[in-house]
Image (cartoon, rainbow, N blue to C red; front, top):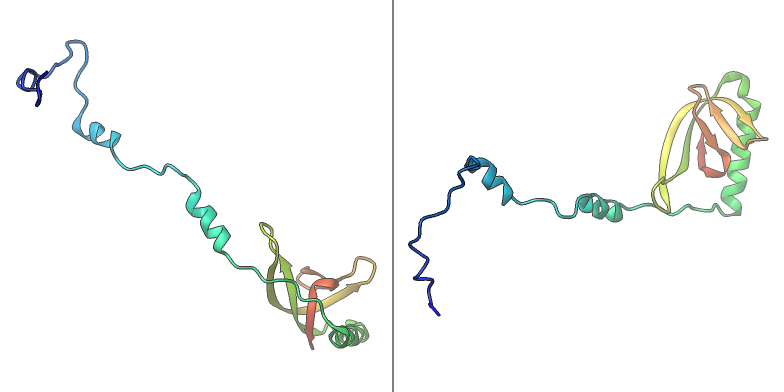
Length: 133
């Protein structure tokens, strides 16, 4: 048995009579790197994205919120300007984020438990942790 393929090393390379040789550019593409795990980078980024936990207001904070809602009800005819800090649940994972929304109050819907702003933004009362008039 030959050690270094001496018997075949100098033989001519076979060329097909039926097909054209593949262009070098296409041959190189066969060996180019590829993403074996498509979407893996996105999954890692999603897992690494941080979310906040919902804060449940204590009794004192709840009474302050109720007082502010009562004050808003009394001034609804004025369309009072407010700054609301509220929790927005994350659509993809548990938790969410706290955002500050500024606007003018159009109405307070006690049945649905929502504050509706003049720009038609609807904010559930249960998600509000702070109201600044």
